[in-house]
Length: 622
Image 1 (spheres, rainbow, N blue to C red):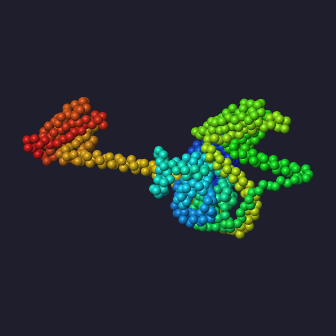
Image 2 (tube, helix red, strand yellow; image 1 turned 180 degrees about the vertical axis):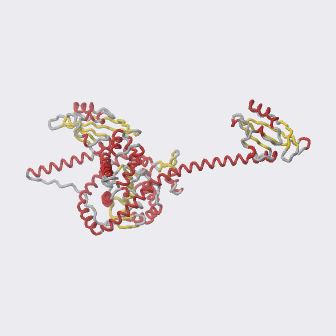
Image 3 (cartoon, rainbow, N blue to C red; image 1 turned 135 degrees about the horizontal axis):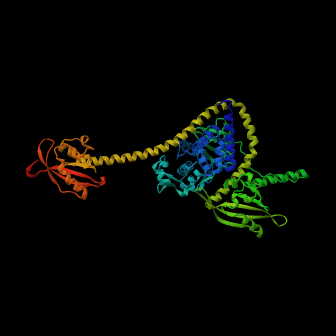
């Protein structure tokens, strides 16, 4: 590699590409392990014949569909129902009784499946709790959240439809109880599916779901570097209530968190949050009356910052435009939904695609300002590739102190989901915002504690990180191999079924021909022998391997075949069966016999015929 400069340039280009993905689409992969991440990105680059990260970034900027292909390559979705049965057995036999005994009988039970992929894990949890509590109590008390960063996987999870092969790990009675056949697929029962809520969530950036009894995050941490893993575990510790359980994958451990997590089963990676160190409840900062200009400025700046944070966290995509048509604000949801960036703030609104697609907004802004009233446009259709979304758009003029329109706020409400799901998402978002504020208030205390622990276990961390890194790399490779192996198994199963069908058909036909005592000979269009049954062998003494694919009229045996030529030709031309023709012949024993030959057309071979030969028994001959 020379002086190493190509490697350095490649690393810098990779970091630039990751920054572009974060700014353009809201996917932050900077906490992922560079070895695994770089390998997956290079695999996608090879698929589209691109050799450098810079060229691949250009392709992403010009081809919007390439983002989805890249994310599907990076985010490996390998999951199944009750994956690793031993771990689920431990969860069912030891964890469940303790979890249910900790609260009152009417308390809500909250479970989070982080990195749920296509939903099998979340539905496995629903089945497990239903088997323990019964259906009615589960529908009343249990709430399961399934989150992932892969929107395509989440769409599959929300549908609850799976092929029959996915249900193979389930016992037959569970398949019958919890799934209904829907065409070629099987759907998870609808009443229980409503207790499982799926949503997009990035565990490295978004605030965690709070007050959890059980948090399941299996084979997800292994994709992140040590720093990102530490931050994620901090979020998980905050999310769990005291005594709550953390269920990790077999390649993930918490060796350095003994003071916060108690080990229930190191083999199965089940931990329990220890009591104490609870985050203080969130309280709004008290309003203080300050004297002097500095206090007032501090208060104004603080309120302005809070206002910007609140606007940016607005649950619906929002864009604000001033009276001159300049973009003032693009909140985070609008940036992700419409592929906008912070750099678009300050640009003329008319230069943005969102100003005229999916609906002409510039004229609506002028109309709202002129009439000084809020305008609403319902059910606007927006297509992105094969996906279709529908929005209710609110165009709201904002008046200044002089009564004139100073700006216009445009809010997009996604109405493609059900009303119940929208209400639930709103409540969860509020919980996440509150949890994020509470988490911020405990960061300093957690960092101090972590530094004290770090100094005493530094050697153990170094050794553990090396072993864990190797183990996680192997596990990642295994996941990739398993995904490919499942596809090969499916193809192999289809080929085996076809082979069995062909073998069964061939055996049947051979049995039919063998069972006929008379000689049966099948000729193709060129009068070559295609079948020679046992009756023909017994009559003439020629084995099938001696006659197959040989010209019939050229065979030398006891039957004068030339005497049959006219009858065969007439059968071919008319397509009708000929009457039996007596032909003097010599059988395999050398006896002179009269052979009755009947010729029938064989339509399947376009001109072929079937000859039925048997010795005449007239006049007492045998």
